[in-house]
Image (cartoon, rainbow over all chains, first blue to last red; front, side, top):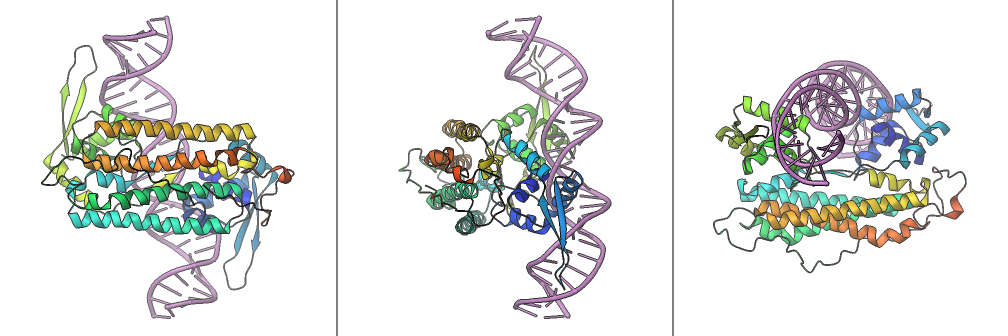
Length: 197
Length: 197
DNA sequence: GCTCACATGTAATAAGTTACATGATTTC
DNA sequence: GAAATCATGTAACTTATTACATGTGAGC
């Protein structure tokens, strides 16, 4: 999915400026499964306007920069409705954190600890953020998507909490005592049921 | 993280051909948190070789194409060890599935059902795959990373299972009372709160 | 006879990121 | 006085994807 479609979709929900769209996708309720930056948003908005899928009007607030508030047109709605019928592409997940964990045995123990703790903090911050967003939002689709994100992050955090000790000790690392039982998440661990939300 | 570092990391673990690296990242044990394709892997391998971080030797199997088996050099190991000390960048997650779910109210009910079922199948396939890979692998770092992936996918699948009915009925969609012009921008529609889980 | 798996590689293209340029107001 | 927030936009650059080019052997 390209940034054009993304902008169209957001503007399907509400009017917004490029600046606001950037906020939504980089910090807001969409940030956990979407990526975009100014350099792609502004050109996309211009292009969509040229194609007649968007319109905008200027809002002047004295003493502040003029805002170009974009709104979707009927053509825009039609184009988006068509796109959304397509089968969604597979999810994409990239994690430098996990990649780094593969090589935990090359890391000074303290460094590994810091990395894992950093990841846990990221996850917790994301969770707080999503939980808050969920309380504020009223659309069911959005709540569903946020709930999904919360479930995933909770599971990841829980995994790290449960495996923190093993990971930070020599367990994860090669360790002098390369001893048996390395299963970090023992297969059928009493997989404590996660109640999402 | 770029493809060069990725190749270096994989070759840190074992020798491989470009073809094999592609398999590892697109189907193998790394596939759940890494992305790469031929078009980036082969050039990366060549460049790394030019820089002295890799070597290769040809393996000829009669009747089959010659294989260029790459191995990491000492310089390569050093370069990689240095990279791995850096603080990993934040995880990236992109989901067209979740994006589509935001607009569930634009979708024919059957289509929404298919999409959710498709996602569940993807998750289940990924889980089977990871579970199998975990059984085969012996490195703790790898097991840790796989365990993390399993935890996330399990949570996502569970979330969908628990919310499937609500989602596929009119619950997720606007509902019968919301059917006409579906003005998405009206702020305060009667928002029935979905209790995720 | 066809398609799939093995195997390497290139080139055109698409796409988006980073950094820059500009500028006012508010908060520390 | 400095930094952050609001606000829009461009251009150079990096990066990777897609499609193509080539060829064999095995299985259906």
